[in-house]
Image 1 (spheres, protein in one colour):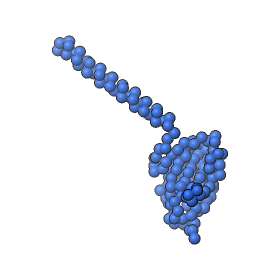
Image 2 (spheres, rainbow, N blue to C red):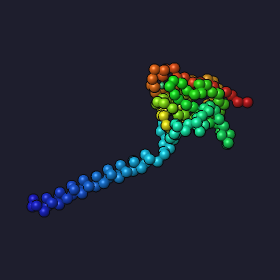
Image 3 (cartoon, rainbow, N blue to C red):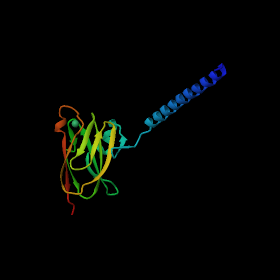
Image 4 (cartoon, protein in one colour):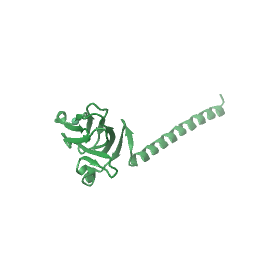
Length: 165
Ligand SMILES: [Cu+2]
């Protein structure tokens, strides 16, 4: 090969390398921009929003429990903390969609409602949202499924589903 051909060949690789670097820079910028937007991400079938835990007193989490919004829809606010759920027990109506909002105030927790497919990872500073309709009345135990410390096994709450009318 004469040196001109070799130059061409090298130029090809140079272009390819530059292209890959440019691509990496673009991907990085896109990811950084994405991560700075207060995000509503959906994973494991539930939505996640961010919350400033310093301002929790000015949110509905100040008084956890079942609420009805202005449209009459049920909203259940729960807090996971070491080593309890707040509220420790709550009554909800059967056959009505209940939108559960849950956050953690200290460390990573889980919130799993027995006999349902509700199984949420609860992260401090994030609010997970999931809507569920309990078809059958009864007591549903709520447990933590992320090891959170010595009292993990005692983290327990109850959702008492009652027939309306
Ligand atoms: Cu736990």
